[in-house]
Length: 470
Ligand SMILES: Cc1cc2nc3c(=O)[nH]c(=O)nc-3n(C[C@H](O)[C@H](O)[C@H](O)COP(=O)(O)OP(=O)(O)OC[C@H]3O[C@@H](n4cnc5c(N)ncnc54)[C@H](O)[C@@H]3O)c2cc1C
Image 1 (cartoon, rainbow, N blue to C red):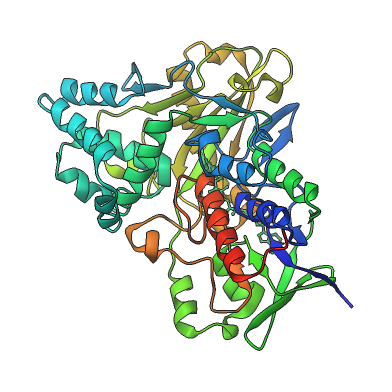
Image 2 (tube, rainbow, N blue to C red):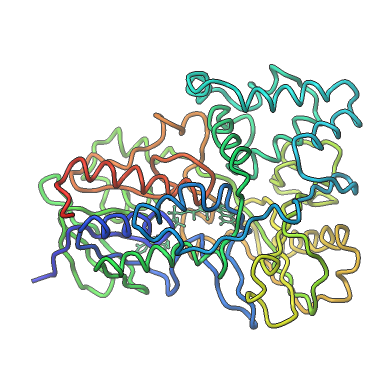
């Protein structure tokens, strides 16, 4: 007979680990499985030539003061993640070679310099985003971001600059992004001023939740791929691993891709056809290519720079989505993880990442060319870097897919106007006892915070439905 648990969790991304910790804290006998040898899904850190490298180019929007921190507060481990704030030194924006502090005012000044008369409009946009009432935010959930911005200005430079923020938050195009979700996230980031990165690299976040699972009596098994989620009489009953072992539970929570969960792990025949259709038609966020550069010594104290090489640009360039073409200059986000935590590199050395958008399914040759362009961009921003490069490597959507599935997209189900707020897939599925968690269902926020918020919403749903043991 297979072992029985109160809840089984398929996948140890941020959402899976967070719900595991929250349920274990509330007295559930929990077991989490992940197919990978390391925890975290997209939000992970791997070892390479003596360096610890994040899979992504990560910065967490509101760090300790957001949903990632809320999970830890709820399980009474508030300090389990040590955060380093990104505001010292202040993040920069390199706009066409000009270095400015990355601030609302600087962006408005750029607008004024390159498009006289736009300063006031840009400042009014920012001011309204900060002061707009909650009721109006709700009304703007289904309004595309650029339609909302057009009410202030149609100037291409302002659209370019602000599309850069939308791209960083949601990795979807501004004509598809939700104005309401943008305003909500922008307010959280602006008011908390606590964008941050965890000591130990991105993996420190899911690892802290795993520590929580274990502390409260739960179990975690890595290198354990789930083959099937079993359903009987419209109820989820258990799971089967690829090695043939089985586990039973009345609650199965999938942190795997929602499409994969419905079509393969469970099977479409168990769901109503309109639900299957809806899930199949969901669209994902965009894709990212990042280069990880190892330097033999520290060349910059900067933690974060947004590099925009063009005054204004076609939108596919702005967001870095090349539509198959590689522009002369590639824009993107530059981070130096070792400026948050020097232990992520051998003593005295530095790591710098450059991330930009790209398409999935390109050839390795095409990805290599984009990587070379990213390196050129880095050399433009840091002219002295050339003499200090030990090596660099290019991480592609194919690598992300090998960790987290979903064709290697950056975030999960895209936060577009048709997939946001009440239009987002719910954590509750039509099958009793089967739930989805992570950046796939429910939630609000930026990247990993969206996944954590999905878990917080789900634990509240489950605690309402079942009698907590604690
Ligand atoms: C390049 C890149 C840069 C990013 N930058 C940022 C950033 O700067 N800031 C930010 O906040 N976010 C960023 N993100 C996004 C963020 O990392 C994700 O949105 C978030 O981590 C998704 O969490 P999730 O809970 O949906 O889990 P996922 O990451 O989707 O993990 C799902 C897990 O399920 C497991 N799994 C799947 N199928 C099975 C199975 N059959 N059996 C067992 N296990 C299974 C997988 O192995 C994986 O571990 C970035 C992502 C990428 C890829």
